[in-house]
Length: 285
Image 1: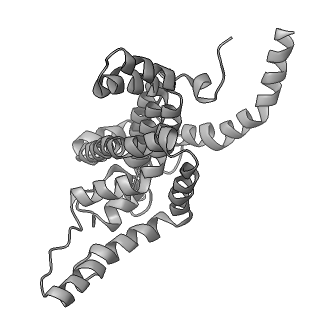
Image 2: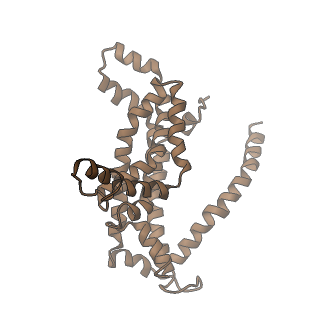
Image 3: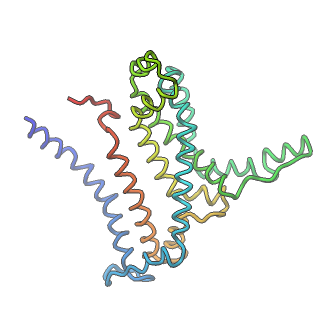
């Protein structure tokens, strides 16, 4: 019976596996193949050449990679810190009001990311919505916070907030109230309950939310262009330039593969620490 169930499961998974192979694995293999062909050559039938990977160090592309990973890491930490209280409230306190918060957050995703970022530009630019009205009312203005690293990190936090909030709320909802109450009855302080009960038991949601936020932020492009004014050139911008203006497909592919490998290693490590059955609400037999 168990063998029959496995056979049915394998057959049922074939359609989605086929779609993943065609839409995900195949393009990645093509990109990997292009990354080892000679520069400025549009053919896969050549002797493998690693010059595109060497350019990562020779021409300083590693700086863009480090900027992308660094800002993604900082934004992920900030997202966790600001999302935890709201996620905790959604999971344990607000109850029916949680639906209202969920709808309010999800509605923001219905509007294009670029439109929302341009809205922020019009709001905080010199002579914009805030500074313009403040100057008209008080005669005092302020310098625009646009076009620097902090505003890029702010935009990453703003755009990817839902991708941290919802997995975090799901993870916190998995923490049994009885465990927290038992710890408190035994004299544990709120901080001890947080660090020894809440955080460890909510780890699956924390890992998923952190991975989603980090991966998306590491490959983000619009934030550095629109609000950052390309003060910092991120790796996604270098990849876009290589594939379009530079017409250097091997370089663009090599930069893409480096980013993909780094993110894949982090993702695989994180997913290995996650109890997917617990997230899906399945109990171990």
